Amino acid sequence: MIWDAHNVGRVGVWFDCETNRPVRWVRWYDDVSGEYEAFRMEPKRAVKSGIPLHSILYRNKSRLRFVPDPVAVPRGTVRECDEPGCHAEAIWCVADCEDLTPILRPDGVPFVRRHVMGQRYYCDKHWRPPTVTTVRGVTNEVTEVVQP
Ligand SMILES: [Zn+2]
Picture 1 (cartoon, rainbow, N blue to C red):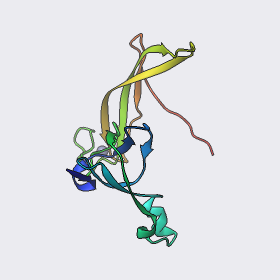
Picture 2: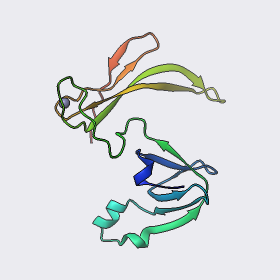
Picture 3: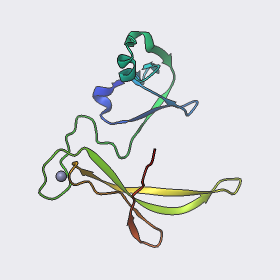
Picture 4: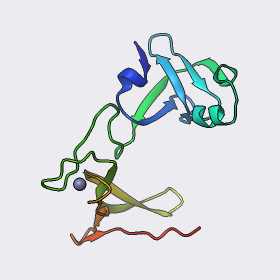
């Protein structure tokens, strides 16, 4: 089967199964032959820079796997805002996570782990921050200030 933006249906990243590295901007992937076609750079940026799309296309053959982005709104889906009574189109998605016990790397360095319990979708007017529930069961809204 040939996979492309029309039938993948989700936003996510293709990974090369051998190298376990992401393959960016995949245009299509044939899971029978393992052939795929991708862009060497972001197609929108190439168009803005006046670079013809056919010049940045390449073909390769490898086994790929698709990993969907857990918080992206599925393609082609118009979701309504989760605020009761609001029927505006949702353009934001936030995740509610819970902390899991840290795991130790073989060298003893602990890794923080979180599990996505659910997502909420909002319009611009009703956006609310994502939450994290600690191992003690305390739920906090997560807000981070980003400075240039
Ligand atoms: Zn709303």
